Image 1 (spheres, rainbow, N blue to C red):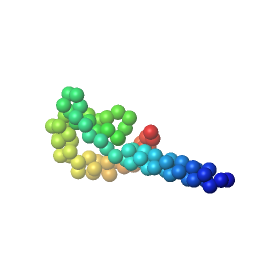
Image 2 (tube, one colour; image 1 turned 60 degrees about the vertical axis):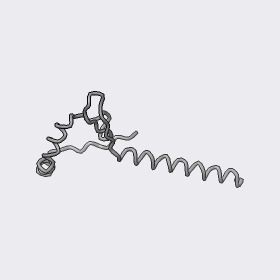
Image 3 (cartoon, one colour; image 1 turned 30 degrees about the vertical axis):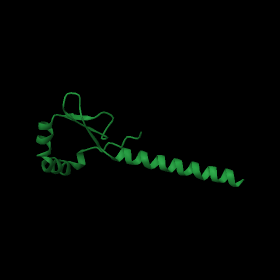
Image 4 (cartoon, rainbow, N blue to C red; image 1 turned 45 degrees about the vertical axis):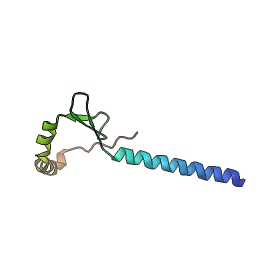
Length: 86
């Protein structure tokens, strides 16, 4: 294998590794946007965004400990959805 071919392959591997890292960070991050109707949309949890108005988010977030306790106490009954790729 020539040095030129070897270097080209190494460059391609680096490109693919960088693309993979970008995809991983994109999948693990949540993005917030204001919807056209003035609500808060959270992207990155599932295929479609989760959208609630600000007062609904505040009400939900005020109960974070209750939700966590509920999940912990019902852990055996709950299913874990696999992470979506792409």
